[in-house]
Structure formats: structure tokens, C-alpha cells
Length: 126
Image 1 (tube, one colour):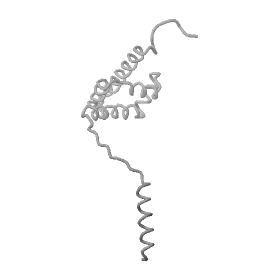
Image 2: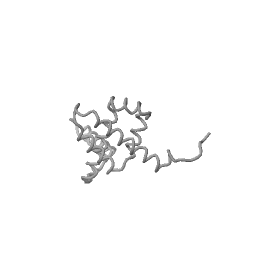
Image 3: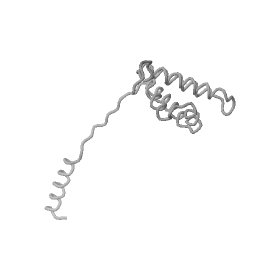
Image 4: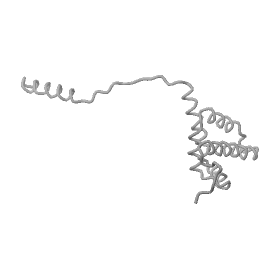
């Protein structure tokens, strides 16, 4: 390879390296509580996305999307409580337990709605 071609190739490589985007890698520690809370929220979301739970919510007059939105608004402690309850349910055993869990979820949803003001008693709006 002639000397001018090598020089041209070197200059081209230098220019291309200068144009390459430079990204610094960032590594941060994640608290264990954050990981656990995320897992609890995923457990509740998976439970609410099940067809039989959505069907039961609709029978009770609650839209599954609204329940999922309210479940997303739960605090970490409330999500952990629900995730523990979901984890203790027998598989296909006790039929009263899923209804009790749905009732607990509905109570929490209504309480959150009352705190937010969605279900606050007052004059009817027209």
C-alpha cells in the first residue's frame, strides 16, 4: 500500500473515531426495597390481568382498566400486602379465597377513591 494511501486511511480513521458518539457507562446501586416493591407490583398486575379476575371485576361493576390504574397507585406497603395475599391463595382449592381477595382489592380501591375524592359524598353533579 502506498504511503499516501496509508496516511489517508489513518486520517479517515481519526476523523471517524472523533465523530463516534461517546457514551459513558453509568452503574448505580438499586436498593433491595425497590426490587422487592417492583416484584410485588408485577405480581398484582399479573393477577389483575388474568381473565377470571377481570370477569369477576366486571360482574362487580368495576372496569379492569380502572382497577389496574388504581392498583398502580397503591403504596409499596399495600402492593406488598396484596402480593402476599395472592401468593397464599390455594391453586384451584378454596373458591372463597379469590372472592375475598377481590373484595380486599375493591375495598382498597374504594378507600383510595375516597381519599382522592372520586367517591366523595356530596351533591349530585348534573
